Image (cartoon, rainbow, N blue to C red; front, side):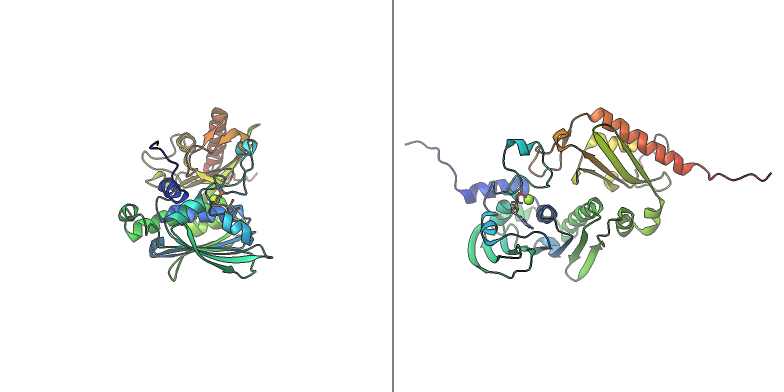
Amino acid sequence: MGHIHIMDEFLSNKIAAGEVVERPSSVVKELVENAIDAGSTTIEVVLEEAGLTSIQVIDNGCGMDEEDALVSFQRHATSKINNEHDLFRIRTLGFRGEALASIASVSKVHLETSNGESGIEVFMEGGHIVEQKPGSLRKGTNLTVSQLFFNTPARLKYMKTIQTELGHTIDLMNRLALCYPDIAFRLAHGANTLLKTNGRGDVRQVLAAIYGVANAKKMVHFEGHTNDYTISGYATASEITRASKNYISIFVNGRWVRHYTIQKALIDAYHTFLPIGRYPIAVLHIEGDPYLTDVNVHPAKQQIRLSKEPDLIQLIETSLHRAIRQSMQPPEIMEKK
Ligand code: ADP
Ligand code: MG
């Protein structure tokens, strides 16, 4: 008799959770991304104790019928890709079918969802369904994750202070709001509203909500395109700077990514206009055929590989540099004859 066996689903989900669910903000990220993929126009996130006690995400997206709601918690269950071909043309934020299974395996979940015709309410603990019943027919999804890591004490011990955990979620929600100005977001911590956007599609208003009206007013708009990519964004001209690069947000096809070379291109566009050790507040959107972008680098999907990167870098540097220079030119004064 051999020693090797295939581990059960609950154990393998818990292992996957180790990668996907690092802290409360990772849960918020996965749930809000699901809400975005579901076509929601309003998304509300309510945290108790920075999400360590509970994280509730309420959306008005397409919702799920009874059958889908039950399947959605299985590992590799997704409505977003069907075959290998789709994997190279991903237009949704999710595609791995792992998030709900992972989150449910390390928490207690209460799901209420409906597609408008069929609705269900499900209670789960550690990935097991403990109760299910017919739910309301309000279209959309209302998912609460409570007692995160209740069954993985080692991970729970690793959690930082409420302030630190909350900081991660605020940062994430700010980026999502900047990326999706058409969606009305609200982030609340207990009774306090920490972020609220109106969903009217105006990036400058979202910038104002996050970085203040005065800074938002002074940001310059830039745009440009190559045959493969279109870029657009807002950035502070040189008089408004920060000591950290954390105020730079890069989005590729609607996904917030961390990309060293693109970030560097954005900073390099300032040439000598930025004091040493100072960085702009900036938002950069890059759109291109999903075929050119590989997001399947890490389970958290924040890293990305881009084809034709040198052209893109060049485009960012020249477009932003031009916009900054223009903003610094003194206004033309008509001379009297
Ligand atoms: P993925 O997003 O990678 O497909 P998830 O585990 O995050 O995997 O979700 C599994 C499936 O559950 C999704 O593909 C989607 O069909 C469904 N789903 C999850 N959240 C929502 C939501 N808020 N609204 C509608 N459908 C959802
Ligand atoms: Mg998902």
